[in-house]
Image 1 (cartoon, protein in one colour):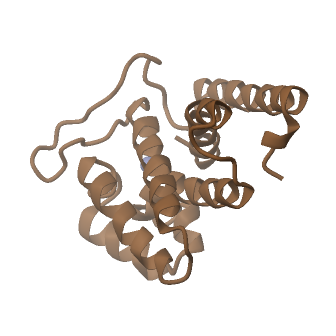
Image 2 (cartoon, protein in one colour; image 1 turned 90 degrees about the vertical axis):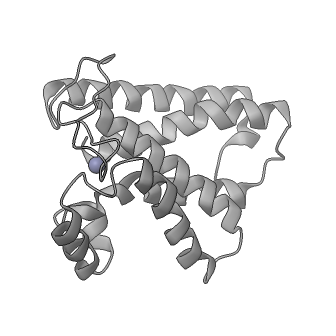
Length: 182
Ligand SMILES: [Zn+2]
């Protein structure tokens, strides 16, 4: 998936989970927490591609990190499977916790974004090696009919999610503007 599709799909999926929880009052609404969550959600949603030196995340972080990971593990290797989901959010939450409070929010946000990224790559034709390190089998989810990264099908999905996001924001604005993030 392209970086913009990873970002918008992570935001929409998180909203579908957290907006009902916020409306139900299970978690009190706190704009600082929401902004923190969204920021690290986006970070988590692009983090797995740290194994690709030309990716957005590799341009944000020091380049030696992605070069090292790509050299050792290759693209869609260690960072793109169950082990990556378990380990990478823990490492980066620890690093961010040195500078930020709310590390539990940061962890859930990075973990969510990271997991959505892996699910996103699962529906692409290239797929992922779910159990990388143990076997080289490629996993693909076919419910969307696997598509090539950057293909017109991905553009349709991105456009649909963007329109859905705009409708969601408008609905919140009309129904309860106190739930808007800013
Ligand atoms: Zn990826």
